[in-house]
Image 1 (cartoon, rainbow, N blue to C red):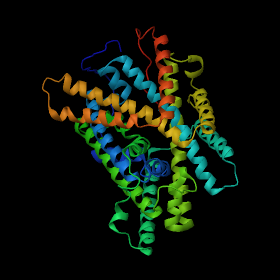
Image 2 (cartoon, rainbow, N blue to C red):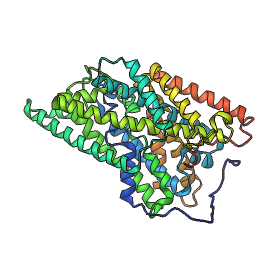
Image 3 (spheres, helix red, strand yellow):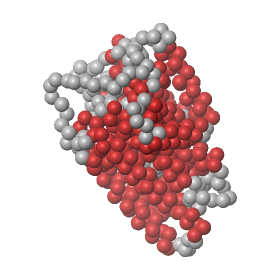
Length: 454
């Protein structure tokens, strides 16, 4: 990336190309599997505590921000169908240095995901065997994720789809339990039914937006749809439509889940464990059986996420090591027998172990969203520059989505708690200093943050 304002790039390659076999609804299902239909459940207690019960409101506000951002992702996928990364979109449309900052923030997300999965799995396992110390569970799950990746054990697409269907069944059973629980209790008036959206006694825009800055984690992963641009029928239309529909369906389902949970619990505090609060809500609604079913389902789903995100982080480090952006002798090595970046898997496992002991689930989630919102704002700005400022014909439908998406994301980003903003800023500052040294003042090619081919 040597130009700060490159024009459209067209590449032609000889040889076989990927077959365009995926339909619109194939993409939507893929996006839902990526995000997971149970996405808001691990966040429920933390968001409820921060937003003082207005979890539904935070999910809906976050959905609006994600819908506008999804439009920008879909449009940028048209321009760069072989990429799919915020790092590429921002670097090519705005400036390579801004692309580098976006990529560095994405790198933080890759490292944080295994940490928060380790933390949540440890809390959920503690609900099953409370006599085992939390520190022992942290060690166990960090070791489990590392061992799975060292042995080359990976979930197939069919396994992920089966898990998504299984989670869907559990969600239906949860709704049935909630209906029975509420039907057996005193009838709820209009005020009680509206409380999860707006409670006059506790509502504060500042607290709701702080909760929204965490609740946005519900939607993380929707941008993965854009990586399939070369395998989709009619990609110019379907990537955009699938990204928007995935965010919309996720938002509606997530809102129903947390709305039902809030009606059951009735308050915004008093959880036995705030990180696994949804599991305790399920227990109140459906007894011990529903408690264990939801707990086990979320535990299995998070184990899958933790293992997958650890490998993704290891692959990102391998790509950076292969390009000699970080020490190639350690990070750029592939273990010959199983053909995995073994050193990087061990490194990420060590980071997850250390982070599990040092971070809380809430702070880890907020830091992850710190990086994600930088990427979201960057993609919105890239879409604004490409389809409005540089367009031959300026249309309002190309102006409003990226501008509104950027402003809403910025507002939510600024609502992150101070510890997350301080730690995130320190990470970004370290990245800028490192990048400036590595590229001699950003004069040479920057580090690439694209995942290398598998």
